[in-house]
Amino acid sequence: MATIPTTLLPSGEPVPVFGLGTWMMGESEKRRRDEVDALKLGLDLGAALIDTAEMYGDGEAETIVGDAIAGRRNGLFLVSKVLPENASRKDTVAACERSLKRLRTDRIDLYLLHWRGSTPLQHTLEAFVQLQREGKIRYWGVSNFDTDDMEELLALPGGDQCATNQVLYNLKRRRIEYDLVPFCRARGIPVMAYSPIEQGRLLAAAALKEVASRHDATTAQVALAWLLRQFGTIVIPKATNPEHVRDNFKALDLKLAEHDLSVLDRAFPPPDRKYALEML
Image 1 (cartoon, rainbow, N blue to C red):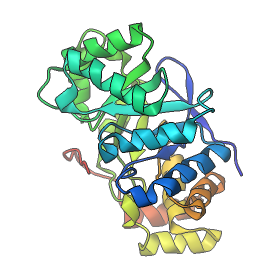
Image 2: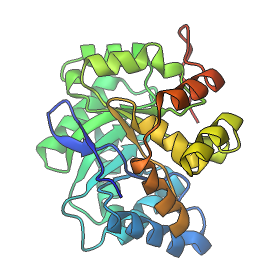
Image 3: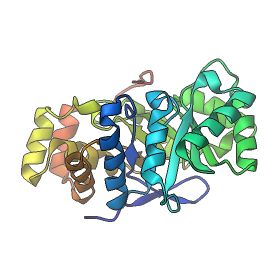
Image 4: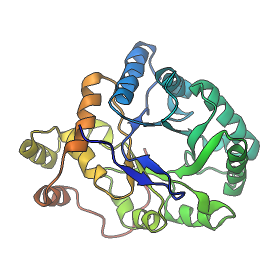
């Protein structure tokens, strides 16, 4: 299995381009053991980045991550998110402290505003700076920000410290390639791609099947490999059983040829104009 490559945060720190997602984990007690075991297997296979949020499972996903990383926190890069309704100066700090308690750790490596709400961005930034000063987070970023949101953010005092923008990105959802991706790349801000296989809805696509058949691969591996070759992009697929965890990791070894990329571009063409940001 290939070593997981890295990309750089604006600070210059390397982070893995492939991690473990937890969206929709923590929603069923019956699946809890499988979800913990899936994360543990991912860590055993070499993953060092886990993405979660206070919203996922009303905090239970963070508790599951806490169970999975118990005794192995060092060397991991933890990402979590604060909801916009908790994004005031005071409430951001309180939300982070709740997340730390559920994760059973003393620090979050990257703390994101989950999407933009009514709270002034400057207030959230001030809370992020306080959390950094207290050692409770190392970096901060945003999620579901369009280009105009990013421009406004970076123009604020301290806004240029934004470490990432986590957005919906997969073969079917390429709208951000028109302006948001180039904007972030020009400023050294990695894009984190959530829902990289469109919650499984991409997997029956004929083009993916065609490419997969040439490589003795699965359609999920092709979809992930396509994202992994995008410069400055961090991919965070979720898997809750051992077979899917292992299959996702095999995408790291899959090298798509130019013909493969042409087939995928014809089936999922890149945008030719600006579109509004999509969210799930």
